[in-house]
Image (cartoon, rainbow over all chains, first blue to last red; front, side, top):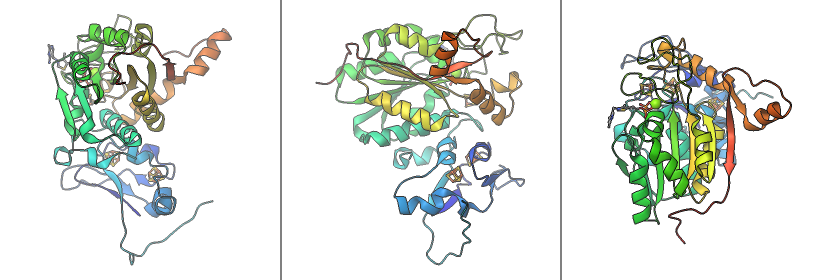
Length: 90
Length: 262
Ligand SMILES: Cc1ncc(C[n+]2csc(CCOP(=O)(O)OP(=O)(O)O)c2C)c(N)n1
Ligand code: SF4
Ligand code: SF4
Ligand code: SF4
Ligand SMILES: [Mg+2]
């Protein structure tokens, strides 16, 4: 699974930056086409939910998804051939 | 997980300001509803007027967006006419405790079978930041430019005293706990009241040195103390930290309820 921010919904409140235990969301610096500075993702493949959601068959952690007041954080299926780097943290 | 197909996608993004806590409370409520396995055509959301009261407009069920303060009166009507429906009320501190104060205490007294979720941002958000019955002492609002001089209502304690079967309080920072509390409320026959303290960065934070959303969230996080800890401090005769408020389950009981389908 892949973590995505819906640019058409995010209002740039940075609550996700505050809550993610992995620091995956970083405050952005550039305005998007709607005039909003949305957060940027730092190696989102580290997110527990990206790695293990399919295996466990349920949402893991998910606090960014729950606290996001604008329903902008979601996970989408990856294309099977999409290359990604996996870092497992112990 | 939030029930994604319960949102009116065509209405999103909603009108709430950047970082407003109301959106988070909607998420937690829909996650709890999803947990219950309720169907959309068996569920009704009712609200009054205010930013918080706009919530049902973003949810894909039948809903009533009623007049200011009267959400509980309309919700009582829905429940009496159709006890088979699940009734959930979204309200604000002004809507529930100022203009709607009498409906609040009497709905609790009657213990009408519904779940009431109050987004308490301590201010009249929608109308530009006037003081509400929950504005803390000393806080600046447009109607209290020298600081609020009246004592504030404790909404959760009020619901306990008035007779609601389930009462809990959390904040928009405590998303997991809030979701669990709403789910417990949905399961309880009789009136379940969940106070969700939320941030209004625009009309509360801006006047009270909490301009940044993160400052408001930090304020909620650091001033919340568990009921159990509060009670322990009281029993030990120790002081309660300045400005602290209790969070957790305040009551769960089985008083006779009205409108419960047999
Ligand atoms: C009968 C009536 N009186 C006053 C108003 C103006 N009014 C609209 S919203 C509001 C206060 C809302 O405060 P609250 O319930 O806390 O909602 P919030 O916007 O803070 O979420 C008031 C006084 C109204 N719409 N109708
Ligand atoms: S919490 Fe949601 S709206 Fe706020 S910055 Fe993150 S993605 Fe955007
Ligand atoms: S689900 Fe948890 S770990 Fe994954 S991005 Fe969100 S907050 Fe971070
Ligand atoms: S005025 Fe306050 S309560 Fe209303 S949408 Fe803005 S932040 Fe939220
Ligand atoms: Mg309010």
